[in-house]
Length: 474
RNA sequence: GCCGGGGUAGCUCAGUUGGUCAGAGCACCAGAUUGUGGAUCUGGGGGUCGCCGGUUCGAGACCGGCCCCCGGUACCA
Image 1 (cartoon, chains in turn green, cyan):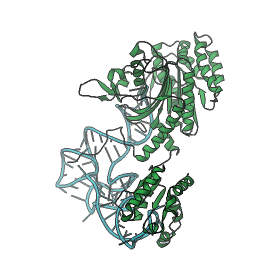
Image 2: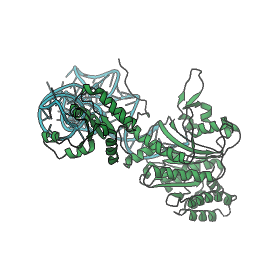
Image 3: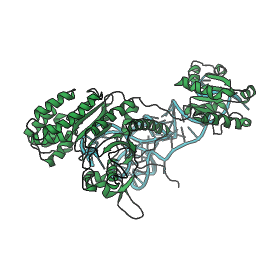
Image 4: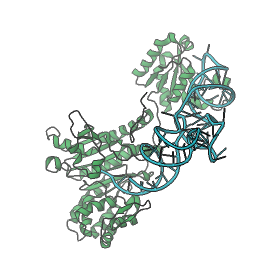
């Protein structure tokens, strides 16, 4: 009896073409973050359960993967990178980790949720956070970083929308809603994009029964309270300045409103100064974010060419997350990219290269007596920084080896047999040009005779010649 | 979690009232073609018909249970 090769649901392998796409994306993001001067951090996949659990609600607890160890400690796999960051901040002194601590982290996280389209139980997050900065310059920097990252990824159009939990708290005061109800209100408002105003209104009041027969429990607000929420949500403009003006008018009599609105005004103003205009960053008061732990500005980014993928990049300020470890709050603000979700979106938009190989050159082995020549040429190219694969399979024929290059999309094949050896030359075949030129040829003999896409060059000029050909392919 | 639709070759799928129904196309491999990936032709390998049980002389098909996938919906730190 053999073992059936399989994976538990929600888990997947990434084959080389998928890994190359993911790595390319991660490298681009890392480039932006390091350009901003953030530093990398790694934490273990496994944490103590109580460390993970603190900020999570009851249903969040359910989706933690439990882990056992020989000591029978209560452990789990991390479900995000923010909680481990909070642990690190609390655990290391300022001597070891001087503040502000600005770190990036790219790593897998695990959630034992029901898998869905594009949603797995293991996925990569790429986080960017500033810890220890009260000033909204840190928030500005995160939002700008989101813009620059999406720009560098060449995602096409994008829009970073931001709002503020503090402003939403003003709304609670304005509408006479208690803090406990506020949590539910934010959760429901977060669905606005997805389900529309009408359903949100009903869910905020008495609830309803949806098309599938499910009962949606209502929050229990009065009609007057919902009216006030709708007045707030009615503040919409492509101009951040206009939104701020309207907001000040609406909350003219709400206590503390000017100070909180000043915060987002400064962020907006900073962004204008840096050239992040209304076309890329919008002040959208309907942004709430599901997470309970946000305390200040919140933001999320959508792709304007693929809005159905929802928020691909989200974050906010969470000043109290370290509280439960240290008993005191430390200001923090950050954002997280759903790498796999964004990758899925970019793949669908056709913006991801479909590389299958890292090699740019395949050295074919055509004649056993020339074995060491093949080795020598391969290492010559490698030492010149040209990614090169020496064909290691058992096929003897050139045809098989070219087919191999074809299957892996290796653009150049180096052919060196007895003929080339005798003349002191090498033959290099451009696979793409070869394919194009062979297309109209129906006759086999003619096809073979034309040696499509091939050039020869002196053996001594191998490296320069290949380099030139690769440069032309770009 | 709930509603609906599915599961037959690597992929997409056909399979009649239960009785040569283990099939097609594509892909793959080999040969035609011993130094050329394409095209063409010829040949070939491949399946626990999702799993377990039941009905039947006989089940891919019918019945029951389970698993998984897809669409919708809910949840999502």
